[in-house]
Image (cartoon, rainbow, N blue to C red):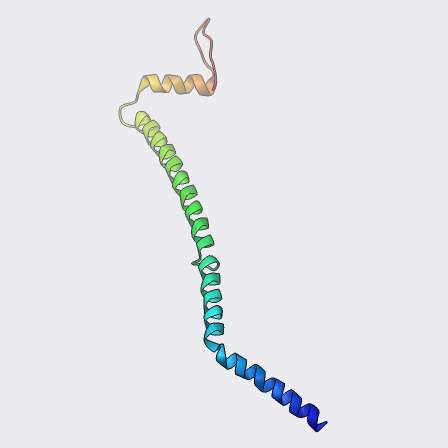
Length: 109
């Protein structure tokens, strides 16, 4: 039994000596893996960066479409306020109520 304990102790000591000799290498490996993992993943990682860039492009496209819609609505509003544009009113009536002159063909979009 005593020989067995000495053998285990000796084997354990050899393991500790090897670890002490390669401590710098092990620490370097763990730090490299930690930095690599955080570079690729996480809230500020590379993958998250590309997802946020994609979301930014989608929001900019949505913004431009909303600005175009707003400009169109503002133009229609300006045609109906102040000095009323009779030609525009006529086109609105024709669209909404499908009113036309005799022998006139109406095409809807």
